[in-house]
Figure 1: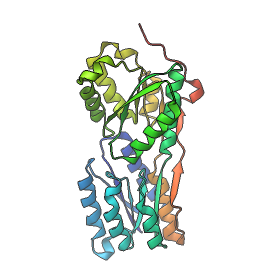
Figure 2: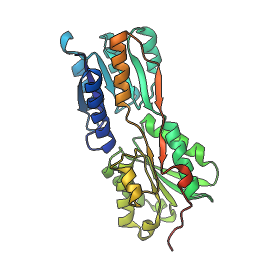
Figure 3: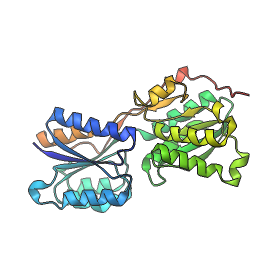
Figure 4: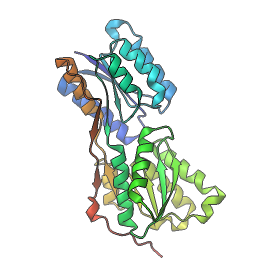
Length: 298
């Protein structure tokens, strides 16, 4: 049974756990032996994990690596080593330029990117903001890591959809509740934050929304009336938070590991090289047409 390594970011975040389970379930269905490892959010740890597998004896190497990069362009040398050893290389939720170079040099290998359409995630959240605040306002935006292509694309889509009438302040977290709380708490300590009254808190995942809400509740008496937005939209996570009124809306983003492993399985069985990029569609929860203007409590 062909072995595939799935390298993810952290076990401390719901969406990463979903991706791990999706990888295991899909592997069982398509006949792959999958090993899932987490980098604990550290790029160096992830690089060490990957090099250990790439430089293992030939019969112990994986047939392919599916990786959500802790550092986007920082894995270029690792990727070159992997494909040089004949290992397929599938990036999930990571966009990089070096994929074109690798595909041109290794025509028979599975080298591709699989991810949610992150700019569309941002556009959906921008439209959610406009539905909540048709007259515009201040958006406090809690992003992922500064060097993450997911963060950059979601912010670009958000700003595109917002258009005029909105002012966006971006803070960086690392996708965990604790990081969302730290990012907002640090911002609140700044002198410049005293004059800013957010009208909506748009978080780039549901976990950070929980932390951001906690920090604001502790430091600002008027925060209880604020609408919070999230992303990921897991049935037991963001969707329940919407039902409880903890989030005004979230965005359901599909797991990427299952589709990535399906591409690997097809390549191993038939030799069919996957397309350069596969984009999966996100959706608003609740549907955008059901989001009504927000009225701040007096």
